[in-house]
Amino acid sequence: MNIVDLRSDTVTKPTPEMRQAMAQAEVGDDVYGEDPTINRLQEMSAEMMGKEAGLFIPSGTMGNLVAVLAHCQRGDEVILGSKAHTFLFEAGGISALGGVHSCQLASQPDGTLALEDIRAAIRADDPHYPITRLIALENTQNRCGGVVIGLEYTQAVGKLAHERGLSLHLDGARIFNAAVALGVSARELAEPVDSVTFCLSKGLSAPVGSVLCGSGEFIQRAHRIRKQLGGGMRQAGVLAAAGIIALEKMVDRLAEDHTRAKHLAQGLANIPGIVLDAGTPYTNMVFMEFTEETGLSTRQVTQRLAEQGVLVGVVGTRRFRLVTHYWIDDQAVEQAIAAFAASLRAV
Image (tube, rainbow, N blue to C red; front, side, top):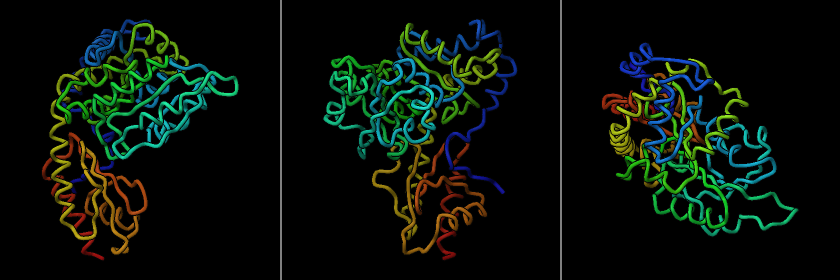
């Protein structure tokens, strides 16, 4: 049976070209700064983000943690959204490991934080309060439906942050999806921010890794923190080689994932008992749920779909997230639509 895995774009596997590049990668000791393949990946990444320097990091979660710790001291505060990945899904690392306090603002349906809410959240200079040091955004905004955050908004937040002496970090795990959807470069989207992370191991299909980019001075601080967290790697050029292929070959084709997500949504919309989120999909994520009238539980639905070779992500009561990626082709989309239809006919 062909398995259609729509749980996340993190399930992507390296392409044959990546595997070949990994096998042939020139390596050295990265802790000494001597791995040429990692150095090349970091330089490419910094150039693509319009920043002075980059740092290869094992995961996006570690990348965001390193960034916050490089910007903030213990007891400082970061302003972020209530649906931000750093707040919801990174195990409270900024507080547990960095002693950084978080101020969670309501994430708006379009994935933004209201500018007036940000202004109101910036602390006065008072010894009773933590010091507001950082604002963190996410693009694309995962839990708001994979919605894209526009350049003008990021520019407005950057202007506000810098006027108040704050830094701005962007969790750009899927920034290339955002760039493709908007028809702009990732460099443009990252221009207003002081630091940005992006993942190589999601839609770009590399097996592991993220890159953190910022000023040279910032990356120097981040390098020390990565070491403290156990992220210093040795001959990791075998991983970076796949990342280079990802940046060279996998960015423009993300548009195919977006198109297939639209086809998936269109097919599901025609099935009675399924309700799609308004506007979905914005990029490569389809958010949907079963109506109460179906009488189906999440467990029943996922089991019926799995029996037909379709795996989906559960994000709430009767609510699902379906993510397209490099390994989801047109036939897989049709298989998924048919599986959902069959699951409902069995009611």
